[in-house]
Image (cartoon, rainbow, N blue to C red; front, side, top):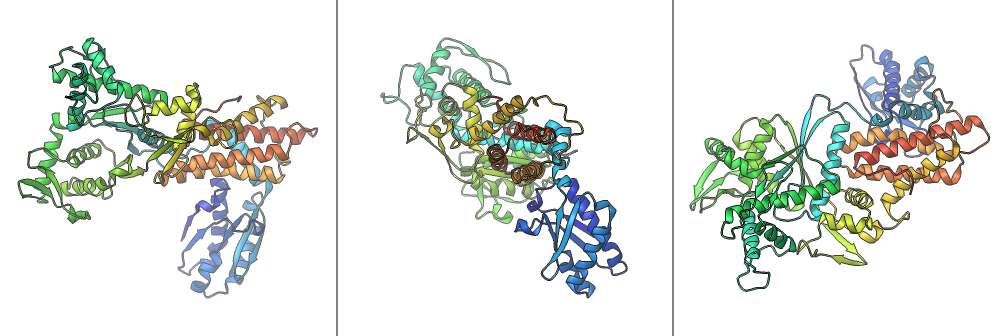
Length: 581
């Protein structure tokens, strides 16, 4: 019986080629293991030293003791059978045995070059997998309170969440991008009273200005439009028409929330992020979902009354202490509607749910998961998954920027896009989206606007986009931009920089699969920078415009394939691939 796996370290080969090599080992081992009852776990790895070959396997070391054989002798038998198998003649160039029984293989140049034809054949689909076919996932991100413009933290969530959604889509999952609006609670009331004060002519710093009010200029904009009795609409939901009555706090609240939802819609549009669904916290109360969740928790026997409050025994589910569900004033703590919301997610058929949130939500993870286990409705343990990100520090003109005039106390996503593009919205969006996924989510990030504006290698998004534009220019000069590459002979591609490019192109599918499995879209930014670096190295070492027609055509094919993979990766993270720069 055989088992196999291909670790990430062997990402420089196409998946089909790995499976073919595993099959060669399995065929070699079949007569050796016959009647032994021993199972073989064929593991392929990349040798630490490239001089040792392209593929390493320690199967002989694993099986020798069980088979009561010398590992080097066993390795000798396996290698002889692998090399004698005609199925491997176009794949395996040579094999040798190192040390006590390590098997090192070298694959043929043709096998390494095969990635070019794979990319040309699959085009925009190259890199996509099918591991998620028939599965669905809901990814919730941004989910800002409708109390102000989106800040840079929301921007990081937007970039991470949208790229993560694209990664799941690339593996065949049916993905729902969802925005959860926290449109209930004290912050909404604060918003309403802030707008009401502005509508009455009271400004920040004046006597009578509410202490907890929002101070940004946008509050005055809302008040002006409310007094003008304007109508506003968000991306979903009914339009809100202002009554113009400064004493009508309910009209002020409804108008202000819809106004800011519309503002956030425009922020997201500028950022190139679209959602499939918007879910309102207020609907959980209106539809009785919160009360239903509380009833389920009470029925579970995991709640108790103490000091006039209702508590949940979250310590039984790994939390460090029990948590209050209902406060002494009768209102619920914020994790109760969160539990209700995730019950609804599960009941909607989402067996996997992922939340992209700021690291300040770390404390809610144990509480929400405890609540979901306590209701005992079949929600799996560890549901939902979380991707928590740390703060973003914005630097501009060599100094940290903390305050936006419009927002009052923070830098907005729109500020960042406008600053980073120097008046070019597309350039600004590309920079912000690339920068904000270029580090692991759980690391703090310094966004330097001055770097984003540079047209140099120091700017990572420019560096990657310039690789794409450079290829376009090379192909135009070579007359190969629209060349017919069917049946192209790739055998001339043997230069060191070409071999490096070929291996990097082959790594793309596994990079996508690993980034999706590890919930790490930053890996795509890392990959694109590596691919761009290898392209630039090729550019300075070799020429496409050569007299040798076979070599020229092979290099044109390599450039077309590299351009395609750059386009695929940039599109996945929502960044453009300009033909000229």
